[in-house]
Amino acid sequence: MQITFLGTSSGVPTRSRNVSSVALRLPQRAELWLFDCGEGTQHQLLRSELKSSQLSRIFITHMHGDHIFGLMGLLASCGLAGNVERIDIYGPPGLNEYLQSALRYSHTHFSYPVKVHAIRPGLIYEDDEFTVTCNSLHHRITTFGYRVAEKDRPGRFDIEKAKAMGIPPGRVYGQLKRGETVTLPDGRVFNGADFSGPTEIGRKIAYCTDTIYSENAVELAKDADVLIHEATFSHQDAEMAFQRLHSTSTMAAQTALAAGAHRLIMTHFSPRYAPGNGIELKDLLQEARAIFPKTDMAYDFMTYEVPRRREAELAL
Image 1 (cartoon, one colour):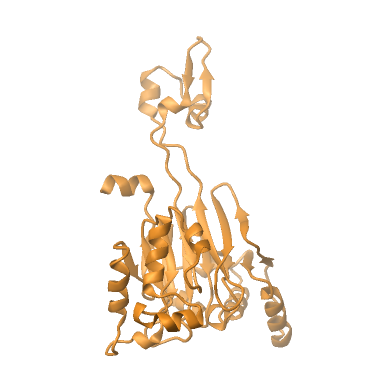
Image 2: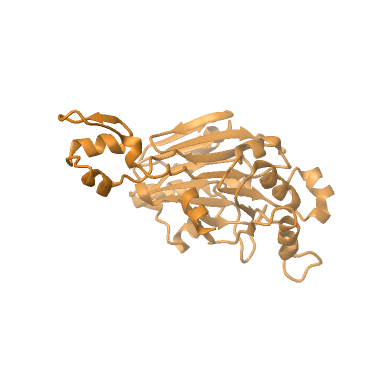
């Protein structure tokens, strides 16, 4: 699971930061999931090492322009390229109407299936490997945060141990690997759990923007390996954050701390904190780390490989 930040500015793009979009690459299944799609996202994809042909799911947090104005252009380009099989889009009510209007007035036709799912809090997607849940956040319009959870997997099967105990290879190995109890023709009984290493804990990612501090965001980020959270404002501009229902760096850090997250990556920064101004982005990072030390500050094209929990623990 690899996260790539395609846009980390709030409201408007800057020379070094595009507006909101985060890509989640799932190399084990050659899929790409996108979270938000601000203006210019397709250009950011072209500048990255990601392949738009692998795009299969898009999750939209809310209907503000800096999170959706790139959606129609990206979908249209994917159709012209002819290399996308199907795209499922998840988002708040009104998203499908917005896309249908854009299609009608621009006389555009998608050459591949596009399915829009109007979401409510709860489980919105599940397959053999992942679940995706959402919950309401606290912003000026209907807004959702997302949680992607990889399902736990059995530990690595110890083939050498099975061989040493005289268990014949083949179908029996598959049964033991799945944790089943197997009785051999000679009467010996083996439990698959005795041949597997520690369970591989599924990785968890939470994505929360735009919002002021929210208990629902804390719930989405419970025990997350990575919490991606907006930090539009400095703590020194908290009054502005409350007025506009955006988070400060300290609110993002408090969310990560309350959730027991393992890492916080802040994004969605106001352009007001450009270098040379009275408050700079480095000050926001310092504010957050005073509360939650394992905080990073996203920048465009930053990538983060989400480690497996077992690997992370061994590295300590």
